[in-house]
Image (cartoon, rainbow, N blue to C red; front, side, top):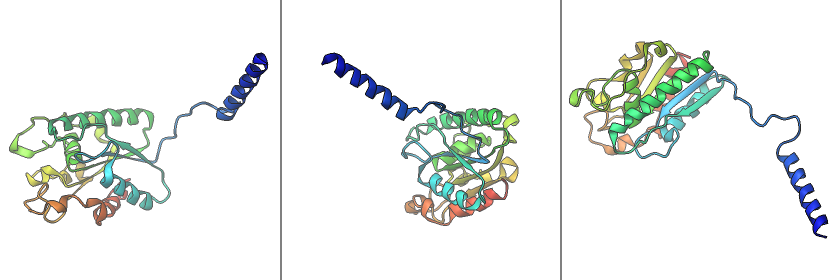
Length: 216
């Protein structure tokens, strides 16, 4: 009986394996290169990924790209209140763009960031994250010149550097848009803290997507 039971168990195991991995199908395959890829840095305290503003931008892009494929990459960095660690995000984005330039040279890369994530994008453009207040302290090196051409456009929301006179809109050869809600104290002299928390629900993600589509 034990032998019979073992035979049945073995047969069941083989059957299960066939169901999970049918003969003739590869175990894994490389994903095709997207037409456009959004590389987005989330805001402070948001969970890993692209965050709520990044998702709103991605959703708007999906609707405006006219059937072209969209890849999404969430910049890997802590996004904590240790703002000096934002440099980790700029370094991660640089490494990812370098990899994409080799593996998917025809993919149009779009940079994006919200709040602290916008500071990550600023660094890639050579803009100190808090302007002249602290200079280049805590800033990562800018994107190498050899990779700048791989960036088709950039869009940031609630950008701290804008408050200090360093908007991203002048970087990347004018292929960038820097959006700040009226009254947002992070990117302007406004005093409405709630203006910094609702970018995903307003018109700005759609506005940014329209700007981006003009360059991709």
